Length: 447
Image 1 (cartoon, rainbow, N blue to C red):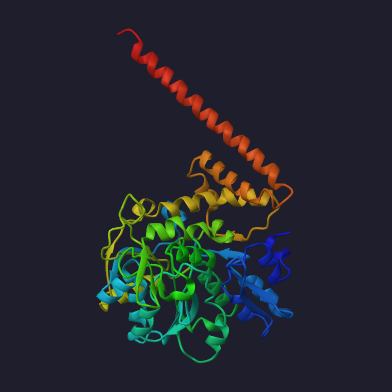
Image 2: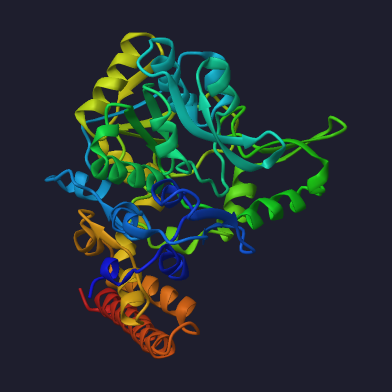
């Protein structure tokens, strides 16, 4: 029995730690049957209030906690690693305020400005800071430059942008662009396949490279590290206002306190990631029409931490996405230059290694009897062989260790993996020792 067929309810997906809290189930299920609540773990969880009924089969086909599908066939090595690529550039929004205010050069916001001002769409569905609590996220429909500028910038906390998506699309004949995490976009893409009559209302699916969603406890830890009481936060942003930008709090008395991106994300937020994010192969955002990211300096994969004008990495995933970028450029909203796909692994090493190691993590989970979602079209085994057996085993070992107390097989799997890892280490030590001996013999042999 496959994982999808073993799921009998929304609650089953949540109990398997695979619900990311996108909210799509609340929109599909019978009115009021499912609600979304913030749990004690700092993530959103579905609360089943009534029978989902006949809509369950549709929820099951759409939910990104059950199946993730990449339907575009890829052929090249680069595309098997990075997903479909119909065009790749670096660039930035030509509006200087947007470029400075937004994250990573303002590429997404520049495209949204083009879509709205040229009447390609009537609104943009995306998230931003909750006005009454800037530490929380809320979903907005932006309709002009002022709206999108207000909601621009990264939001490293749980968000549910697909709550009420069906109701939004049913409420008028307006056309929308959608911006969300890769899993949100995957859910909406699957929704449009199940309900194809909505395709004419969703003009563009835009996503970004994602390293995972931290819980609200991550944000709380960040605020604590700044020495601020939550009740004293008047404004808060994770980054932006420069590149890479600083995590910044403005207190009720107007005082501004901040920390660097390296401190906020690198030392605090990424310690609080959702379990599902750790086994996701699509942090690269391959299911959208366009994927944006940081065009970090080649060779480092991380920002220099010197504030400077931002640069967006832009990848068109299909011809529709390519045309949108070209139109935004020709109308003066974006400035871009062509980029080589061969450099991607140097500027995004985290995404590269995550993509290659996810198969080992999934294998450990399956051996332990833990339920994992189904991934279609992501070339997991192809990418796994591109990294060393030792790296795969270490990833397997790390996953086994995390689950050893959760399943009856977890401890045995962890101990077996630990033994194999130690064996590889010893073999590596023997190889290095032998190499030293051979080098010594060669250098000391008679001329």
